[in-house]
Image (tube, rainbow, N blue to C red; front, side, top):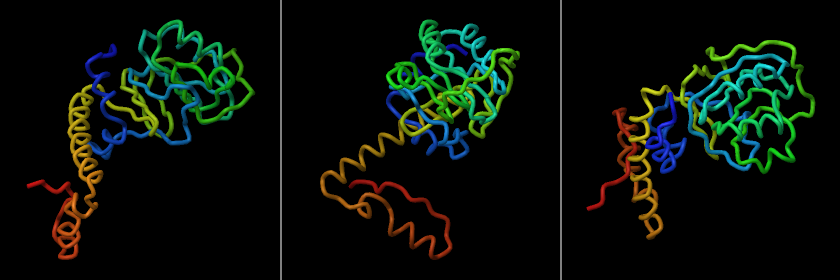
Length: 222
């Protein structure tokens, strides 16, 4: 799935927290896989790789993926570097959308100021070999979640999530509605209101105490 500029622009107006608020079953990559680069925001289709202690598959992926693709590497959560400065530079040259490695990455002197979003579970100086063929464009596990080729990978300062392409439009619309509601609450809090005044807190607690179904919501303004 090519990157859709309209959807990417919508993501700029929201964040991964709002998307998770829309759907509590969203695939959230484990927080041990962290941003290592100067930029953390990602929006693009997954180009998947599975390899173990060998980076040849990652190199193949960087050369095979299309512009905007996000390389997602199932490295088995092993503390072996499966990429570094040269891979990042190569990905930038091909206009890729980012690299996410459930394994190690190295060359932080460059990566720390790199404009390509780079995520990894470990930072380590020890690289893998380049003698084994990796598996490309197969379902993989990254950070405890399944990632299929073409799934959308989204990331920001909060973390990484994975979304099926056919769901992203509705999720983004829901996230925009949540952000608008949050902004209205923030405006009231900035004006001196309390959380109890901005949310239906008392009513919600009372309903739960009575054993009735309830949902906490922003209070309507008269």
